[in-house]
Image (cartoon, rainbow, N blue to C red; front, side, top):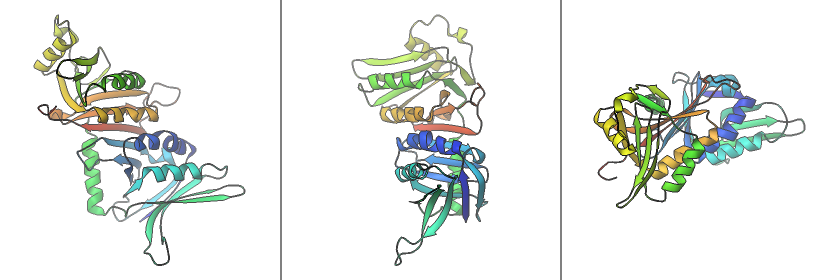
Length: 311
């Protein structure tokens, strides 16, 4: 099992300044999954409790001279502490010099201990060199890698309807205000391009409705709504016609998902998974200087839903 590559300047910027800080906001550890064509960060995908996050990069976006081999179809996966990974990356790029090399190694922490796996960063400058060893878990075996791949495939299934959400900073401000009212957030998405966010208590409900948003996937004719005048009545009609989905999620989970703003997405979308299984957040990145989607980078979150009776 071998892995060795050089981080590109763009790859360093993506990881150090954007994606690792965002992942660090939602958890302490993540899986690193290396394949012949992709570099993937996965948080919590093997569990149904808590926010799941997946960031996938084409290998050429992050690395040069990418070399990987294993007996598991040249796939390698392991878990790593995000704080240690980010600290090592920052320290390694703090000097001016050659490209930053990263590789998997085994070293003995001491002469009396067994060799342990590390992700090693090596940066050689003009007058100095920095080597940072980040401890990692034992690489996953064939069965565990297949389970990780299956969870990844399942987590990437898109909802039938996605609506483009407003500016993330606006949503962060909204959640800061209404989040103090309760721990459960009601989220509804309609095929007309409407997004409903609401928190309710016994005597009061507070939230916001966003209308005529961009829709990806299955959409319905908004003129079929008739003369419904209130947000609640519009949503109720859409639900009755099967043209909307509504779920309840943990308020803290939703707030964590908004930390994706650290990755600086150009567009964000929200949808409800099949049979109301999850709340799905998808983020798009544009090719610099264009409005074209950069298909070499993707990020999405999945939030578990709460039992409506319990909510």
